[in-house]
Image (cartoon, rainbow, N blue to C red; front, top):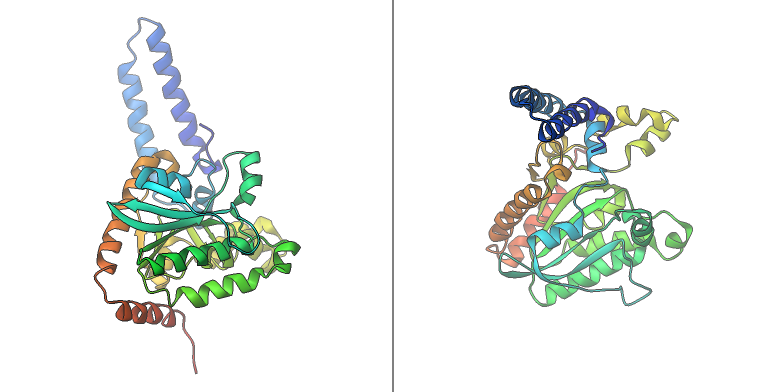
Length: 316
């Protein structure tokens, strides 16, 4: 496994353990005690490194190419998924996937950003950066969910909305703004989970909900660390400093009252154990949906409105 820069000591030790195991399987030599000592050392090293991650290191984990994406969580947690396509105005933006599924035996509407695993798929998915048609598809699916009284789940994982000229010409900002306005009044429970990157308006276009949760190593920010560094320091190399300044980690956001809950990840990140990450996400999702569906709709909408109105500090 090729690790991130700060994971190099872990990767080197993992490689050494694997080499010893391969050697002992081919030779009649017992190196069990040496392997056990190295495994104990590896366990301790992992805990030391992953318990003191910086904001920038968490951003790197959130961007890990093997991290589970929306379709992975759907396949691990949902059944009977039927994907719905298109915004009925222009085309089907494949940076957003969504449709009807069964979760815990109940029908829901689920949607989220989708990245690719290789260059070809990333081009198809536009690296998870949605066009205005993607956000209009999201709103169309939410209106269907409201019509059929289906709870809504959104999974956020995008560096940001697509910033190209063609997207702006077709109303990118308006599409996101319309989603913000309409989501506040969608009269069914909405649970929002950031599963990786939560970048700028591209994230918030799916981010208005009754409960907003972050996976432990995800981030949620008004701008990317590189973008912030380019503006403040005129150099994207200052991204680590920008990450700290932006307060974009799950712990920071929980302390600021921006999110409601942090979903724990396996040690080292969701990509280390996708099934465990999905289990943790599923448990959080079930608990929140079970609580929200008990709330009368008028009260649900009032609580949602109050939730977002109280964010931030200001003077009149």
